[in-house]
Length: 284
Ligand code: GLU
Image: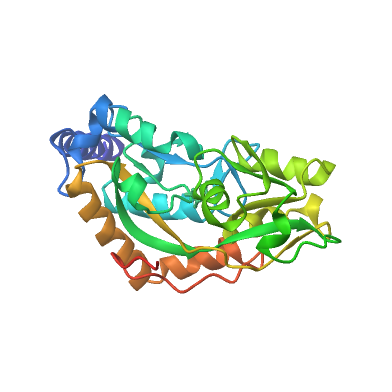
């Protein structure tokens, strides 16, 4: 019977496909199939992202994920041989990122993760794939307009971020800096008046400011207080993965997918992003 023949042919195709997967496809990253390097077995890949940053990394109420980092991670994973349904996203908060990579909890991290020397001592980076700048998010009627205005004021940022470090080191050492575990907690503080300003990357702040519930309530200061070169973090020494990710990022820019992801994710927040960075070139 015709139907039978089709079924038999499909079965053969399926067996062949499964055999190919088991043997590792050409561009499949075999090392990530082991539990110690961010794979969970079964040809899956674990990727670290943020869960509470609209426009960048967001876990939606229906359990799906959205944002520029999510799109970059999904594109890169595909180039490494993992379709969307093979990705398992894992939350990596700012303070957890180096540890998550060192422990092998995830294969790579795309989570507004700035490349810097302190982090490079512990992890390796591919990229950069976006240039952002530290800024302040303020109530619309705030009188704060420059970094010096922050001294003596209540400021909120996240533990383990370059944003908190920069405030301590240079931007406003005399500010009363409250450090919490995620930016959404800071935003709640800004709304209820317990903090005068939230500081982190403008890309992140623009995403929060554009949320329906905050429309008209918050403004960005537009100060460009630092250069934040977003990289994709990988386990220290895993240069093969760094090379593959860099190739994927180059392709993402050259085939127009990077620009598409920028428009889809930053457009609604009216965030004026910098042009695509050159791989390996850090803007100091
Ligand atoms: N990009 C900065 C950092 O890597 C701030 C944003 C964040 O905490 O993820 O620390």
